[in-house]
Image 1 (tube, one colour):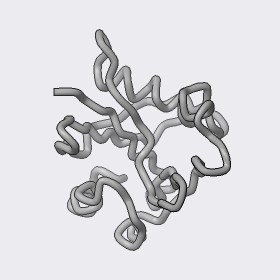
Image 2 (cartoon, rainbow, N blue to C red):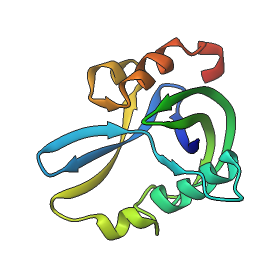
Image 3 (tube, rainbow, N blue to C red):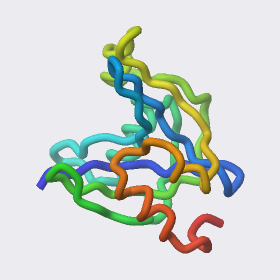
Length: 136
């Protein structure tokens, strides 16, 4: 089964960094992250994806939750330690970015995730079920 490393990047114990995607007429939100490549651990993929998508250096924390989505295992890492300035990195997203395929970074209040079109939707429920102690 293919795997994907997802990042739950937390700021001030209250806000989560999400990517607002606009593809044609579709608009939705996603967690930063991407596929685990051959010979790579999920943790290594999380670090690489943070650099490629966000231009951030991160220290992944504990796994908050895992789920299966579209036939692949998604591993969600809590990230509280990061450095750099958030900007579209050197990954494939930069090449795909245009007027009809956009990537925008936003800090969203933890309690507001249930009010946006966050994909996969099952991640919203999992996120809200996380123990608050893991967020501090």
